[in-house]
Image 1 (cartoon, rainbow, N blue to C red):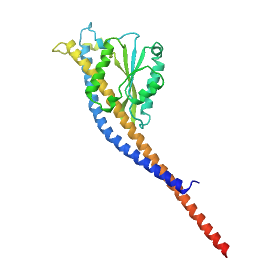
Image 2: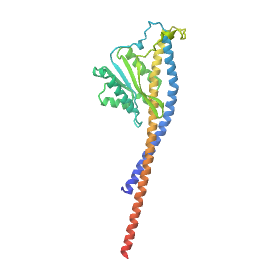
Image 3: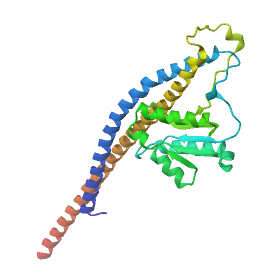
Image 4: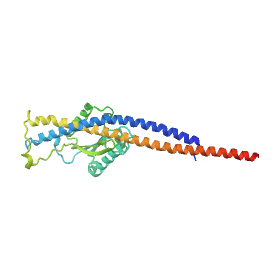
Length: 293
């Protein structure tokens, strides 16, 4: 049985850890409320933009071609896993990394062998993992998560669109955690470029509403498509941040509960050790008294 001093030291250590995890839980909860509100207001806006784009595309002439929707065979693929800069958020980072590695092994293995796969990591944890395992990481954007704002996301989205339009990449894919609730996040693999255009059902096309465009639909689409893609990237980062904060809050909540349970066991052990020490002292006193008789 450990000594009273050892048990007392462990109690102090666990109690200090509990205070830290409890404080981190409250901080994560405050950040979660803010990020949850941000993604809650962004999603309907992003969804409506996408619907508008699809409606305009459906009303354009059959011969119209959209550069951002050009489907190309083969060529380079850019994979963008979105993780966090800090740990202590449960399986949040591990789930994103595992999904990215699975995508590489199952769908992008040929591109990897042909040196046609490149990675752009958003988040220090993903950056460290893929670089340590010699994956072709060509860029990182860790600072994007520290001071997230729409302007910085616009710069990233414009760079990605420019790389696609110039032919550097034929496909750009995000892997990130989509926020559902504080205790539920789902890892999503989402193709950023080329964009997926809706398949128009000719049998139902006559029943759709006809729109009058001013200026023409092509010009409107030229402005709307980049805006929609920028909004999509911003939504991805907001989703990931909300998922990270939710995962960290749950992880710190569980850590605090575990520390509380450990303290209960340690205090029980301490009381047993203290009782055993007192009993031993009483026995020694009684034995000494009996020896003097």
